[in-house]
Every structure is written in structure tokens, then in C-alpha cells.
Image (tube, rainbow, N blue to C red; front, top):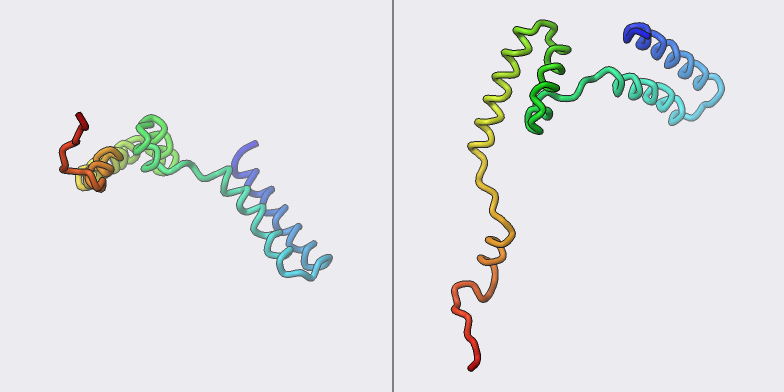
Length: 120
């Protein structure tokens, strides 16, 4: 089944559910749910994953495929992939270095800076 046909079927189903909800149930909650639930199902099937998310996870091939689906031409997808990757690298270089738990514990410990004393 093609995506366009699936979208058309979901829109028809959505309108039928909304019309039924208006006649059968006078509760505004059910009327809103009858419009939102099919729409969310449709969006979850058609929206690709974020290319930036995929780049941050190191999945370059999938990010390129996602951009290709969004942009339509390989040249535009490759250009945007390059700029998005460069932007992510710039953001990472500007972020402060994460401090490990042991370094935090050493700085906040009441015994930091004191020499350990051993009993003889």
C-alpha cells in the first residue's frame, strides 16, 4: 500500500470517527480523541527520524537516508548532512568537559587535600 493511499484512508477514517462521535457521544473528550488518535498514528508512520539525532548517535548512513527522504535530491541531502555534522562538532567543542564522578567526589569530600593518617 502506498503512503499516499494510506494517508487518504486515515483521513477518511478520521472524519468518519469524528462524525460518529458528534452524533453518538456528546462528550467533548471523545470527540477530540477521535480526531487526535488517528492523526498520531498517521504521523508515527510517515515522519522519519531526525537527522541530527541520527548524527549524534553516529548513524551517518541512516541520517543521509532521512535527509534524502526530506530533501529529495542527493546533492541537497549531502550538503545538509555536511553542515549538520559540522554544526554538531562545533557544539560539542564548545560544551564544557564533563567531570567524572570520582573527580566530583574528590572535590566535595571533607577529606580532600588532607593526607591520610595511619595509626601505628
